[in-house]
Length: 352
Image 1 (cartoon, rainbow, N blue to C red):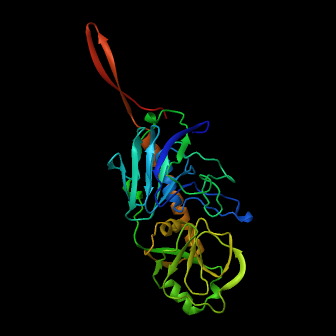
Image 2: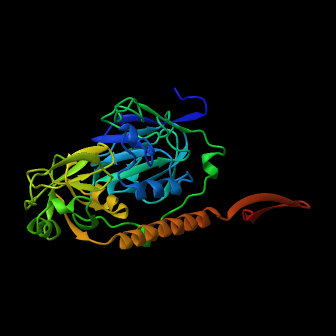
Image 3: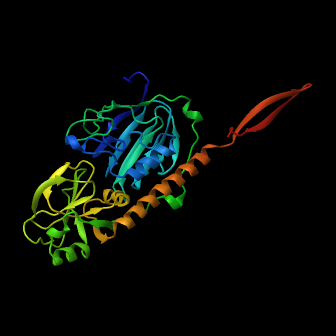
């Protein structure tokens, strides 16, 4: 049953491999041992929300690998972003990176991902679940947020916030092709060295920056474990436990790197050779097991510029989608002139 101010939007017929509710994360709680969580690919989540007219931080469904089968319980507007999923809406293709008007009773089936690994299904109004520590994100290990801190199950009812206007009046939008990311099974990501790169010998640093690493089957929202050439330490791999930022690359005693992701622990005791820059975290998140990654060293000033570029791109996307929302509506009116009745098509342009 929907909560007050909420609208039932999905019934879960099949949950998929791992489908959770995520927003941009739980900020300000790492000092208490609670990780950020949130969307693994924050860019795709933000765009999915903007396509349906939501705030970019609204909660949506994060789909991993093989998606769910859902029954639509009320008319709404949806968008699917991220990985190139084989998805269908009532047996017709459900294309990504655009908003779609859906009717009550429709069936959405998100099958296996082609390129990429994670997708985001956003509903107009956002997914409505109680906030925990300021976020609706699911933290699986801590069993908090989302739906009782767990992934979706068959029979779950998913609510969205009730809309101030009919879904039929929400303008449809699409992301221009030049902004759609291209996912690959082999990616290079940019890193800032440190904070403990001095714990690795010259050969270890060289190996790290000149080798391809394979994503292990033992990878999840907590960390991406990689396999490849061994990275050698000067002495031991252990350090005095300290903070772990998102994208930190730990290297334990076996010399195999581990990229810490959204649900990572907040502290750890392995030396960190480098950190993936924030704009490249989504590129890691879209890798599936057996895909490959390598690392390229950049400076902190370059990293800041890349982050500014990404924020500028999002601002530009927001303006493009807002412009699309200012659609011209066309209405037909019946006009009587004497004994004759005419149909007149009138165009109405929204006010600035």
